[in-house]
Image 1 (cartoon, rainbow, N blue to C red):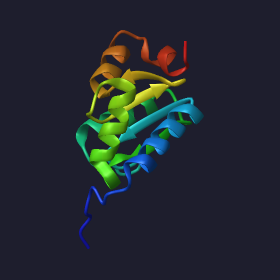
Image 2: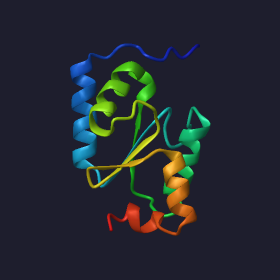
Image 3: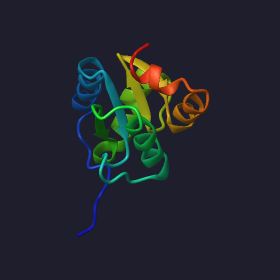
Image 4: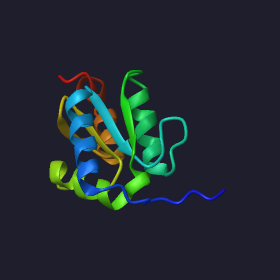
Length: 114
């Protein structure tokens, strides 16, 4: 069985999923794969960084319709790449930004919405 990314959900459906996920979750990570099986190193790194400080965060797998997720996320952040982390509806950044915040001792407070 071969996984076929980008199976082509409608753009409107993906945009609604992104909007709803950002609105309804205190912390949400848009990533390739899921928390248990990240499908890229950056996503794995982001899950690990967030998981140090929070058990309760949502993940959204962008692989099922990658181009549509890129477009929808770009409307929120100006970035097309994943992973992307949002806290209390605000874009924080990708795994590199999370790592920088962690190195400065600021990630835990950021993930708490402070």
